[in-house]
Amino acid sequence: MERYIAVGGHVSRIISYRDRELTPGATRRLAEPLVGLFRVMGRSRWPSGVDLNLEIDDRAAGELWESVLRSARSLRGHPVLSRFADRPLDGWETFAQIAVVLADGMTYAPLLLGDEDDRVPSGHASARTWRARAEAVELLLVSLVQYLWFDRRSLPSLARLPFERGLRGMCRHYGLLVQTLFEVGKRVTGRNSDCHVATLGGTAVFSAGMNHAWNWFISERDARVVAVDLTGADWLLDRQKASSIFNKGFDATRWNNVAVFLWDLLELYEQVDGLLYRSAHLQHLFPRLVEPQTLRGQVLLYNLARQAGLDAESRARIGRFLGRRGFDRHYPAWRANLQLTTLVGKIMGFFDHREQVRQESLLARLLSD
Image (cartoon, rainbow, N blue to C red):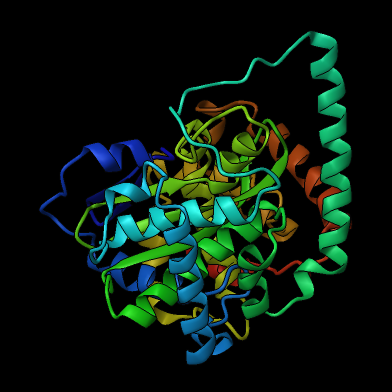
């Protein structure tokens, strides 16, 4: 369910980066309505939806892209970058180059090379326990620093940080910077206009109860979307639990991809200054993405309602719709799970400094009480 996007009978599969490297390019293209949407999402800064090109002028774009190339040249020994030599890169190779450069710039440890499945022994149970506690404290402190300073920087200065001194970022920073630098590269080089990178953010795993952000790499030539999580890859790299940037943490297909995609569309639709604000194209496309009269669509709506960031009224609207459709026959525990999600959403909203956006209007067009 979370591995496929369906539009009018056309199915696009969400795959891992390993599948992308091993599978020849598909001959069919993405469904045309998705192409138009992804072109806009590639230029939309997550989560505000503001046009990235308005925040970064031509001079800053040139400087940022030169920083990427300079860093890539200094990492020529990396097994991924060494394959590229001195030639124009296609969209996926450009994405891989940006991923390697950011992993080097946003980590406390040097970039490590080697086989992707190498692991450093984790030690005794007591050592693992104390390490977990220390990492939890580190996460809280880093989150506080970023709330007070990091998030308030302009996008150009934020994008320069990995090249200036290196600073550990949270998942939203990784996702935004990958997307920003890829869009900058397209703008400066004039290449790969049929490839896009979008940032997704939402409840990635329902059992964890925490939000996460990652990226989609999209090629219009393929009927596929590649889900990648640079944060997870760099987290393992920084703690010497992996020896290459392309490790298991890079695969984001395990997350709730489609549900988070729908949730982000709802949020972008309500962002007043965003490129998708009250978009007629999105109004037309959203029902085709969900297909609420089908069981597949109802499962997607249920997963969407379990997004902790969704406002309570929208969650209640979905609940009423599922109740009328007899969703209890398929999943008896769904009501209790939505009640728990509402509680988690209230707790998260207390700590989240971003103002919650109501997503009622687009859902109201989809679901009639």
